[in-house]
Structures are given as C-alpha cells and as structure tokens.
Image (tube, rainbow, N blue to C red):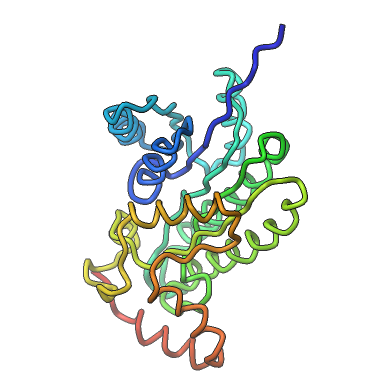
Length: 263
C-alpha cells in the first residue's frame, strides 16, 4: 500500500529575516513547514524557535538553491520523508550595492542564479503537487521591482523579473487552482542590508517595516489569492510613482538616492 504524502510549505532562504518570519507565520496557521537554506545551524535555530511555541518542529534541509540540481534534491528529500509541497515560498535572494561595471561580475551572475533562475525553477518544479493540493506559490520580490536601479542595477532588474513572472504565472495557474503571489516589501531590517553593503540608516524610517509584519501581510495576501502584496501604505505609492514619472527621470532620481550610500 502506497504511503500517503503529507502536504508541506517549503520556504527557501529561511535561516533569518523574512524567511524565518514566514516560517513562524505559516506554522502558526497550522502548516507543516520545511526550511531550506545553506546555514544549517541557523536553520535549526529557527526550527527550535518554532517548536518552542508548541508547533511541530519544521524539517530542515541544508541546501544551496543556486545549484542547478536544487529542485531535484528538494524533491528527493521530501519524498524520502513522505512529504510533498502544498506551498512553495521563494524567499532566497540577495542584492549588492554598487555600479554594475565595478561590482564583481561573478557575484552579480550568482545573484541572477538565486534571484531569477532558482526562483523560476522552484516555481515550476512542483506545479503538479501544488495543483493537487490547491496550494500556492509566494515569490518574494521587492518594491525595487517597479524601478530602475542605477547603483544596484542587477538586483533591481532581478526583482522586476520576479514581479512580471509572478503576475503572469498567477494568471496561467489560476485555472488549476494554484495561487501565485508576488510579495513586494520595501525596506526590512534584516541581514540583507549588511550583505548588500548598505548602511543601517540607508532607507527613510517611514518606509521600513518589520519582517514579522511583512510575513503576516504576505500570508494573508496569498490566502486571498492576491497577485501582488505591497506591505505598508508608503510603499504602495512606489508603483504609482513609477507609472507617473518618465523612465529617464525616474532612473536619474534613483541614481541620486543610491549613489555613494555604502557602509
């Protein structure tokens, strides 16, 4: 007799920040969670903090989603545990501050691998089980996805891809009962800023929201079947501004904001 597979929510980049906050939110709403990232010790700390609240301890998978065989390895690891995805949360990603001609080229290509290629692969690899479970895909983009980003050109472009891809996938998979949501937070105080080379006060305080608040907004938006979630009223003005200002003016404005604001 074939063993029944249990539905799980798979969260990449779950060792800290928004990913860790999403692990708590999904667990609090009764989801069995699988945490994926490279740092096993940090993943275990998140898993223990979830379990400490009286919820099932998440499964931990130490894995680099940038590897070309990451989706296959995740599928095999889940199958060994009699699990299958109901929801995929593509949260893994990073940015680098600096002009594209000065930043390390290999590091920028690695950013594309994580932010774009891996997200695309994991969004598509489990569609059959997501459709069976009437589940969903939550892709973490950014308000950067609505803007040109001189000074963070590759990162902003990668998030523009995530916004466009997710909105298109939302329409394509809707007939199969799969919800697809692009989460577009503004600034969130996490390890992201330090890795990107940003100062602590890089962003105006009125734009900043906590990882916990962003995660709650993301969960509600996904469950309601929203194609786009932009946490915080000030951040909701970003796509409106992008739609009003001509692109050359917007690019020049962003260049002024991003120029020279390194740690």
